[in-house]
Amino acid sequence: MENIFDYRLDQLEDYFLSINEKKFKATQIYDWLYKKQVFDFTQMTNLKKDLIIKLQETFTINSLEIIKKQTDKDTKKYLFKLADENFVESVLMYHDYGVSICVSSQVGCNMGCAFCESGRLKKVRNLKTHEMVEQILLVTQDIKERISSVVIMGIGEPFDNYDNVMNFIKIINNDKGLAIGARHITVSTCGIIPKIKMLMAEPLQINLAISLHAPNNALRSKLMKINKIYDIDNLIATLKEYIKKTNRRVTIEYVTLNGVNDSRECALELAHLLKGMNAYVNLIPYNETNNLGFKKSSKQTILEFYDTLKKQKINVTIRREFGSKIDAACGQLRSKEVDA
Ligand code: SAH
Image (cartoon, rainbow, N blue to C red; front, side, top):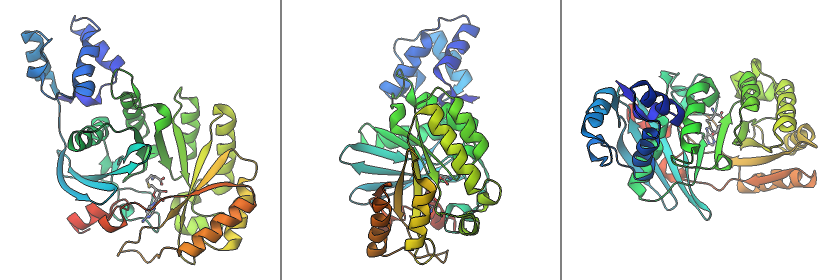
């Protein structure tokens, strides 16, 4: 059986045509699933009985289960169990401008970033499209409120699961579905260059965020294994190409790690690297975990780093700290649950 949340609208239309039904049935199904959020074919009252039976024989609907929830003032963290007993997480955040969710794209991760909890579990498998869609739907049901933006920054490297992630984005972006605007969808990558190039060719206006975390190859290669394959110079050249082609601003993520990448020299080097680029730096306070040796930078150090970038005319923001009390760093909840 296939999961219905794997289907883009055009794919569902093709399905209905293939069984000699009218194309618009796909829109009706989308309306039930995404607008009314009814997850039971028998309750879809405008469908004929024989079609309901056919759909029940062909598709499953839900497959994920929320098994744990931790709540903080402005954050909720969810642990999901997948049908094959693997676990992933999502984090929900309340902002002044709306509600955002951070979704996972893989079970585990092979990128092996030294400071990141998720990578302690090597990739078990890619998430299927429907498993990403369901993270949003189940959380929406739980909070009874519309989620207005989505970041693909949970467990996993989205560009190591490119096709499923793109289908997921197309499904949640569709007007007939959840209608989450492309400008409210952000995909974050550790810098897999060929996939950044593929994204350039997609007709999607989504945001691209790059986990840079270091201003030079020596340091970045120590923190992020991927830099040994796609180094900073090639990455920056690719981003310049991306910006030129798409006319969109790129976000540079920079987790500040105490005594590792938070010096004034690092800030100056970063400013030099990004000079003239349509990019902005998002400084991310490190969420400490018990299992890896890194410490977060002090508030003072982060502010100085920020000032140095500002003085060099680099656009920069400091990410508000979310959920440090509830293990909101990627992979922390899963890690506790399965003790690995
Ligand atoms: N693999 C993708 C997306 C998932 S990680 C990527 O690398 O971008 C999302 C972001 O969280 C990345 O920038 C990652 O480096 C950062 N991150 C990982 N562990 C963190 C922690 N403990 N505290 C703060 N940010 C962390």
